Structures are given as C-alpha cells and as structure tokens.
Image 1 (cartoon, rainbow, N blue to C red):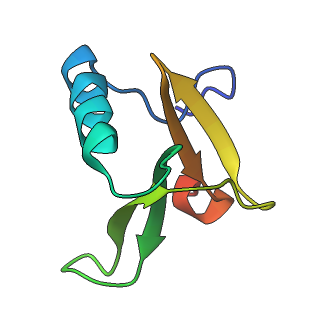
Image 2: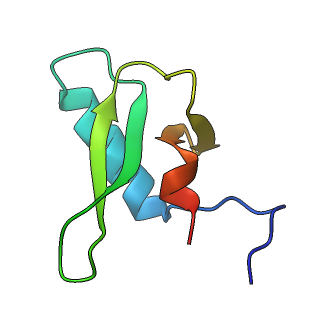
Length: 78
C-alpha cells in the first residue's frame, strides 16, 4: 500500500555510489537523474532514466545520499 510519508524511490548505497561515479564522468553540469515513464516494452510502459542538468518547473525532487532524483507525477502513478 502506498505510504505518502515515504519517498516513492529509494537507492541502495551501491546505487548512489554508482550514480556519483557516472555523474563525475559526465560532460556537462549534471545535477542528478531524471526518471520518467514512456510507452514501450512488453507491458506497454518503460522507465526512462537520463542525466538532468536542471530541475523543470513541473518536476518533483527526491534527494538521497547526495543524489538528486527528478520525476514527474506520471512516473509515480500506478
């Protein structure tokens, strides 16, 4: 069951370390990861993850262990 007091996404310590290493190697000023959903795949939906250089006005943000995750409400809907 959905608990609105908890973040919709959490990362393991290994995942945050991997994201930090990838961001350090990026060619531009990356502030975090943008997580979205697009129509594709067997189920009809597929996650889309990209580097983000800015937060868009319609995006929400989760920060964990120095990693910023940006997402829109459609990525959080079930």
